[in-house]
Length: 175
Image (cartoon, rainbow, N blue to C red; front, side, top):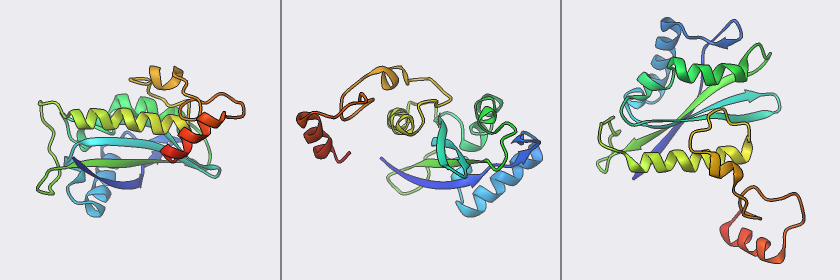
């Protein structure tokens, strides 16, 4: 199971929001296709981020296994999650990353009604990583345990000096 990462790609804006007009979406996908041929028709995970002067934060982690990135990533549901992050904020740039699944032959995996369990796992893994940077991640699917589980030194560590054991585990895991 191999994935390739593409992005970030700046999303089109109109009146302080991600532009939902068909023409803007087409232009966006044309840019993606030119930069990463085949990606718009692939499947995998995508990460919506907000770039600002203070840095870039993940805001939404999405998955597409039954539809292409093109059919999924800029849908009405997704835009309802993206737009609160940029709504009327000056200097904020919404962006998308694509984690495109590859076949053993090196081609992009196509959407299918068959489960892509590896993509589902990757989505959960990306949720975990994104939550370490932004605990206000927009989507809450599959994040309950990631938000509430506490493993000192590893996950949601309490605000205190770590114990010797916690430091040791953290070092072993390369955190």
